[in-house]
Each structure stands twice: as structure tokens, then as C-alpha cells.
Image 1 (tube, rainbow, N blue to C red):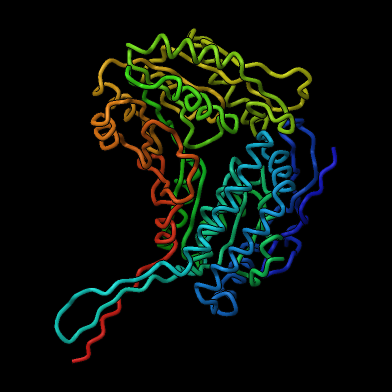
Image 2 (image 1 turned 45 degrees about the vertical axis):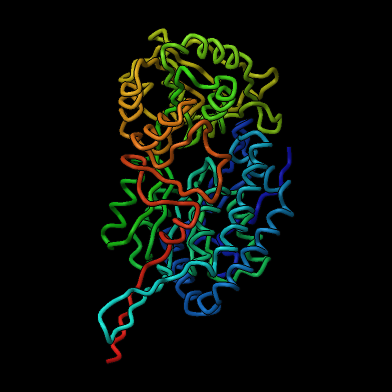
Length: 482
């Protein structure tokens, strides 16, 4: 297989440049284990140069653009992304391992973010505040300045859309550090943005290791805001580094999200969501519906349907476009497999999917696995597995469902399936989560919907207008005119 990689370079100040260190990182295809090429491994010095370039952009062409002009530019970039849909989808499928149709959906989501935020650029307003006689008081929304973005490997394009694009539309200049396991579409997007007319230095991309490039960006004294998506452990480290410079941080971290199925739920409607929310992107999704809580009256029927569906799931190479592809790496496969072994030892496995015939031996494949009768305090029900593994737990009452659902350290997303309208409202209020979906799960990933968590799932909000508020700072002006 031959694939054209983006430039093996860093984007700094509108130019593709070599690293100050000269080291490289391999680009691996999770479907085969084969090395596709190399990426530049940046240094702390490269981060310094990128931050300086972003600062220069704020003081030059980029900083001087009117909000409406920023919006038009982002709209043009969105159209350019759409024209490259097939190429970007292929890059993402090979780089991350997700089925081709899922990679294509991510391209369309990135384009939608550019469209949505481009249209919102001139619609973030301040307000006037009634005050004492002789004063006029008003507020302004202004960019933070230089924003740093450390993004993960599971959804590079989508997270660029909801993080980097949101920062740009508010007039910030960005430095992006993509994950070393999946940087190809970040580089491809940067090239598209530059060719569409993004001014030099507005977006800078430094690829490399998290403990080098990510650490340098998180602790940089001239970065004014940080956005991080990834594990709770790394998020804590990022926040500590930023705290040394009193820099605000948006953290979107892990999850152990419940889908709660009551006796009166429409099981046929719920079933596709119960399946897809757990296996999408091979379960490597922070908002995966990885816990299914089912009321006793429907428990046996739901379990039987889930077992049937799981046994029919197929995993294989990304380009085969099956139900799910490989996990990102051999390391990730080993971590997920440890959890599967734990569930197998405890006799909790009810069904597994199938590895398609002819799947490359070097690929990092994990069969989708369904665990049933899992106690709420079991490790499988408490810890984020980040693989295609879903646990099913019974409950008796609404109060018990709430207790189990809220009984982890996480609080990112929750789903509720019930025909009882009053129960829907009660559950929406009682569940500890940043998003609650009633008789659906994910709302098709709407870019307009604020997204983020509580507890160990992080803080701050991405997506929707809330992201734009987060990527700006509020200034109050009080004019005394006698």
C-alpha cells in the first residue's frame, strides 16, 4: 500500500521548517503494523519559535482582521476541506485505524465546525450594564492571545474543529501539538488552511512527543490559554504545568458514560445506539456509552438482543470498512486485553465479535466484547477501558439507576431510555454529566451542543457558542462622563 504523507516538517510562522533537533517518529498503520513514513519530532526550542510566531501574527495581519473577515476565511477553509474529503478520510483511516466511513464522517464534521464557527465570528457580542448616573458601562469579548492545543489520536480532525477552529474564530493565534500516534490529518489540514489564505503564524503545528513538545507548550510562559483533550492523568499534568504561569485550561478528559434503559423504553429504537456508542472508533471514544444499565423487567430481553448483535460484529482493516477497525497501537491493545482477561477470569463475558478473515497479523485488533451481570464496583464498571468493551448491569429502581450511573469518578455523558416524560426530566437533572441524552445518544455529534465534563472528566466546554466564550476573555469598560 502506498499513501502520500503530508510534508515531513513543522509549520511555524507560515513556513514548513525542519526541527531544531533532527529526530523523527514513525507513522504506523494500526491495521497492518506497517510503517508508512516519518514525522518530525519537535523540540522545546521549536515550541518557543512557534509561540513567538503566533505572537507576531497577533501583532500583524491576523490580529488586524475584522471578525467578519475571519469568518469568511474560515468558511473558505471549510469549503477547501470538503474538496479534500476523500484524501483526508483515507489519511485518517490509515493513521488512526477507524473504518473509512467513520473517517469520512470526521472530515465532514471538521468542515461543519469551520462553517458553524465561521458564521459565528461576528456574532459574539458584549453587553451594556445599567450602572450609576454619569457612567456608561459595557463589556467586550477579546481573544486570550496565544492558545496552545494538545489533541489526542482518536479524533484528530473533529478536535481540531472544536478546539483550534473555535480559538481562531475569536482572533487567537494557535500552536497545535497533535498526538505523535496520529498527526497526518493535522498537517494536511494546516496545509489546506494556508493554501486557503490563513495568515502566517495564525496556526502553527509542532509534531513530536508529548513529554517534550506537549510539556513545553503546557509550561510556556507566553501561552495565554491551553486546551487539552486526553487522559485524566496527562490532563492533571498539563494543568499543573499551566498553573505555574496562571494560564487557564480547558480539559476534556476521560469518561465511563452510562446508558440507562428503563422497562418502558423502546428497545428496538435503543438497540442501535447501545451497540454503536460502545464500539465506535473501536471504543476509543471519551464519551463512549461503555456502561449499559438495564431495569430488571427488561434485563433479559435487552441482554439477549445485545448478545445476538455482538456476535455479528466484525473487526478488520480500516479500509475494509467493517463495524470497527483496530485499536491505535500494540500498547493500547495490550492495555485493553488486560481488561478482557480480567472479565474472562471472572466469568463475565457473554459475547464477542469476530475478526474478519485475512486481517493482517500485524494489525492491532481487539474483538468487541460484551460483559454482563457486572457489579457496579467492579473494575470493568469503574475504569475507562478505551477499547471495544461494554458492561451491562441490572438495576431495580430509578434511585438505584442514578446511584450506579453517578457512582464513578467520571461525568462526561449519559443516556436515558424511557417513555416516561417526567422521569426523563428527573433523570436529566439528577445525572452527574456534562451532557444528557434522552431517548438518543450523542445527538449525531451536533457541533452546536456544548460538550465537556465534571469530576475527572474535566472542566470547561467545547463546541457551540460556549467554546467561543471559553476562547475569549471578558473586559469591562466603565466610562465616567459626569
